[in-house]
Image (cartoon, rainbow, N blue to C red; front, side):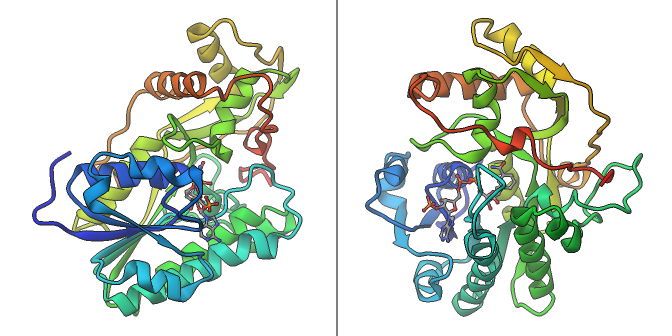
Length: 342
Ligand SMILES: NC(=O)c1ccc[n+]([C@@H]2O[C@H](COP(=O)([O-])OP(=O)(O)OC[C@H]3O[C@@H](n4cnc5c(N)ncnc54)[C@H](OP(=O)(O)O)[C@@H]3O)[C@@H](O)[C@H]2O)c1
């Protein structure tokens, strides 16, 4: 990565999270001054941020909830750009109060961030959406890879109670609508299931996708196809979307579609001693998705083996794989249908 000319000041929301931590690491390594928002600056789960290279001089943490407009204004003040990464990512799909726990922080939170950006007169905002805002579409042709034209149907998200995807869909479409009358540009990036090494000390929902397969206890698994992407490749995509003047609109960010059985076989070949699922049931579900638009912007992604090896190394070093640590099982292994077969 090349260094930026001069010192640009940017804000990253949800700084201590899985993806945002990598975004901040890359920004700091390129010479950016970074304002990171966290809900609790004193919480040890954010302590890794202050240890990043260049953090002591160039990283400042601000306390801000997504529903705290004033806090967001303080964090974005003086910034030329904002990476809006924060959003609750549930480890389970049965959240007791989805309106309060998922929709409000996603939708009102994004609105608050964009209003704060208007006040701060920023030049560009990159909003992290999700393929959850893409895949719940019944009319997309089955044989055509889903691209940036494909949007999740909000009524369908409600019907199948995928409230996280509903929140991401509404937040992203509102952000792109906001861009039509704002003085700054807004780019949205929709990653698939993010895996790879963690910088933060706590487990996050999408890392459970791999961890659950290694930790054992699953007898049988549906052999679903899942789109995945490395956390470092997503962070690089966000920087690319920010830095490339020609970046515009929406970008799907995914690198591989892998069936669960193939993923388990890959893990087994690299780490034969874990307690893997014993059987798989066949399932007629396919996922076709294209990141061609992002690749045309210059995005490249690393080999899947590198992602897996670096992730597992981190799980082993951090004790995430020890038997007495129970994180539950990721619903990402068994989400409701994510195809147009709904
Ligand atoms: N991981 C994936 O597979 C995946 C895939 C597609 C899109 N995404 C998107 O990528 C972004 C980052 O996800 P992640 O995987 O890095 O998740 P993560 O590790 O759980 O990070 C989420 C961050 O959002 C913050 N946050 C949640 N609710 C908040 C609120 N009300 N106010 C302020 N901050 C709040 C969290 O802060 P606390 O630490 O205080 O809770 C945390 O820092 C999200 O927008 C997510 O929707 C993730």
